[in-house]
Length: 420
Image (cartoon, rainbow, N blue to C red; front, side, top):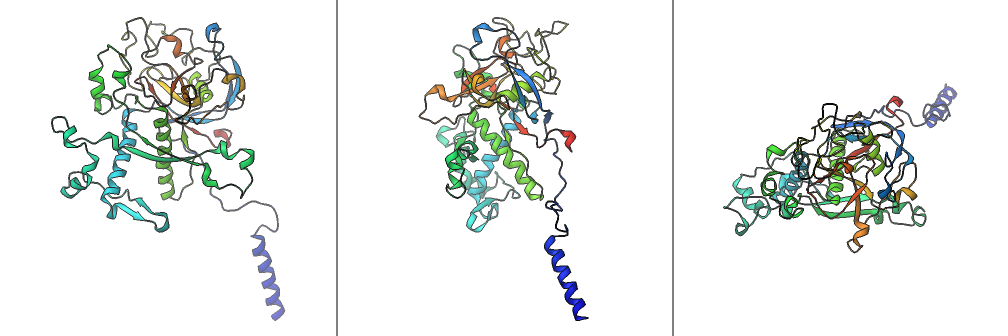
């Protein structure tokens, strides 16, 4: 009986060491089955190859864009440009985070050596007498108030955010484990997130745009219009905030993180804008900007001095006009859109044909030429040439324009949806 007990114990020990796999290579067991859900407000763009660049001969701009075949991996893209109301959620989150920290108490959760984090379950009563005094520094001082209106000071809406510089980490001298402190690759920035509402005035001399300056960002009438007056850095900060907002929710539910939201690369933007149509100059095909009934298919500047002939005066609602075959609205016209790429006239000559990408993290001391970021799609103030899917242009990363907005993308994890 003793021998039987010892023999059973040995068998039990050996089976436990094998983890029930009988000594075979079977991978880690009991991992969750996972399926990538479509992010809210986004559409799936399948992997594919296409000819990137002008769809017709363009001699004057041949130096900046040449036709070349490239491949792009599957991703998700916002079906519309980010709206005023969506961006306002970001601004209000920054405002409320400042208020939570000023109030303290139950509004913060002590995490010991990690410091404090905000308890978002606590609601903020901005009309409470005690809170009014505590939060007074978030409002404009009395001397700066117009007709004694109590308004939040947009200059206080600063957002601290972080990202990992994987390109720097991948350098040969940084790849050896244990020799480089990982913290040097974690980048930090602080940026004011409030849009430049005065862009409607400073972008145009001798043009009366005061009414839209007063109302465009905050009034409910413009909630579904694209946000403008946002710099490239503000757009990037929005993407990082949106990532953390979703991942925090997933973490609370014990769910697995997803890929980060980010700005699209130039190649991703053009591939998505084409909607699966090869060699078509516009998202709807072409070669014309009008349909068979003579109606314009996008919001741009149809003729000199005539902005209204296409149905829009300034920008229009983000779901105006027909979407392309991927279900993306206003990929031509309405507002131009930031991409993640830096602008270089010869970029098509040195970027890879696999997910082409060219980025440069410009410093404040860098010359203006290194601060150029690619914008795509054309806007309500542009002529038809800029609506073409292959047309490249740029703005400086630290400038905010009343005709430039953005939309986000997220990488798809897998070859295609059929993998699941």
